Image (cartoon, rainbow, N blue to C red; front, side, top):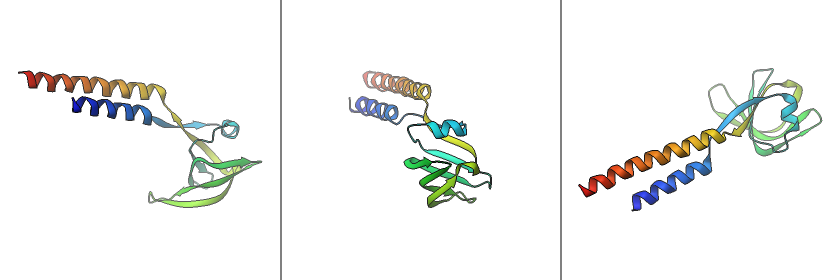
Length: 125
């Protein structure tokens, strides 16, 4: 019984976490978005910046806020400042993938039921 409760709890947590993906959008879409989701920006100097959700604003033609600069060795350097919108060539934002979340939840549920039946069947033999 405890294993079933744990399995259902894990499936529920996965559903709450959901599946996220980075989606490339246009400059106009980036500017007009009301909710400031996490963003990954690439500039014309080939510098990558990761902006955290809700920690940046757009005024006129500049992005102000906090985030990280992604360095060539894979590490992150915290930054606080501004990036001109005209310098950004690629805009990626983090979005929830509803279909992926549903499929993940269903997959976990099927696996949970399968193992539950195996364990229950193994105990009764």
